[in-house]
Length: 397
Image 1 (cartoon, rainbow, N blue to C red):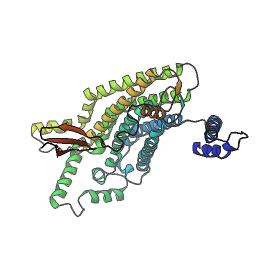
Image 2: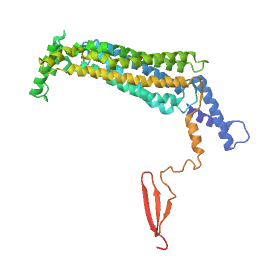
Image 3: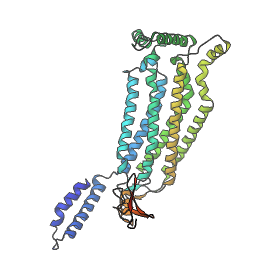
Image 4: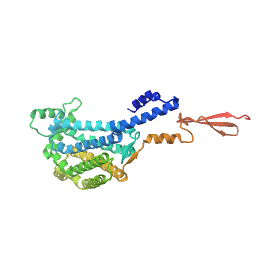
């Protein structure tokens, strides 16, 4: 839009009824017309700045984070046969992850333009850019946590319990019992014995899912609440740019601090106490093993439990980092102001440097230093990545 206005101004700028048609006068007239047209369009036709839209997209991304984290409750309450590829829940989890990644990619593509405009608000472009890295961390870890649904729907997880659909069970058991060409006879026998041991001791994946759900309930709820508080704070900062006072932002900031404290307490409680709930289904097996009644303990479901728990822990740790940054930024930026483009300031600073903007542009020093020795002169020529020493005999040598 700005380039079009500039061309439009250049086309009719020299046509003003002024007697002095000098080049400088025509250029200044065109620039003045361009600025006036741009201000009118920005004020009335396109009032939204990139700063405002970027924060709005960030709030939407936080909403997707909440949806994925809250969706784990539904996943943990689902029979593994209801989450195989092609089922509604499997499609829902895959689409949620895809939507999160697309939203994040859109934010990453716009970050370099944040400091190239005038914007009015509490947060500047650098404040918003600082939020991108914690958002990327949380998105990456949520993608790994969301992958637990694929573990549940994998054929190896479906062969260890019965289901109402006998046809699907038979197909899953044929896939998991070792019909693959690459499986050896020994591997098939080991897998069948492990499945039989899991069913005997009641430590199949479907048996330990209630323990995973109960052990992580408070931690997941605290994570969702903290994400909701961050989203509410960003919405308040973004939608109250031109309103006086910061009562709403202070309220949202207090709510964020409260939810952040609760999340830290939930993480500490899970690490200290609630993680041991994952071992409860194996208590009887461990006692039999200590008594010598059981030689080998089937630990596959326990490993899967710890996969979910560890992923959830690192997700909540990333949420804590994101919440701390949002809280610090909101506490620092309490008043709205006009933010100038940082790019213009950088250009002005570059033009004011004593050596000039073109010094060292090609990465080579065209004025070599001389180090005089007794019999020769050593020319030190610095390039971008190397230093060349060129010796030349002196006149008296």
